Length: 166
Image (cartoon, rainbow, N blue to C red; front, side, top):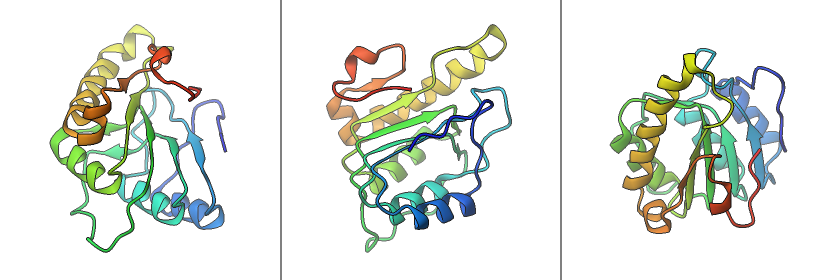
């Protein structure tokens, strides 16, 4: 499923959970943000966790979210998701190490973290570059992403074999 209205998609955690409960068999979901121009997404890492909890077959996820606050953790008995590919779009974060630890627990098989790198104007380029660098740190700290060496931006589509980038 790909929803791409002009201006992006901004859902909160409750909306994401409701969507996930209604579509539990999702394998691919793309909900792009507004591309650095709007306030940070109302969705958080908690919403992402609920999405993958209710959609265990999800392999590809493109969603903007606010990762500036990292939840306390993943419970040991929570089912881990087999997500392979995460496009964080213009997601905001503060502490790459905390985000990497959280994503490592939630997505132990994650292979790629992709940031939005296309269609930027100068007024947002500095913010985009800062977030891109922070997400690069997350990728280097996540064990399977680091092992796969596939920290990508849409400027490098040749590095993604068999996956399309919107």
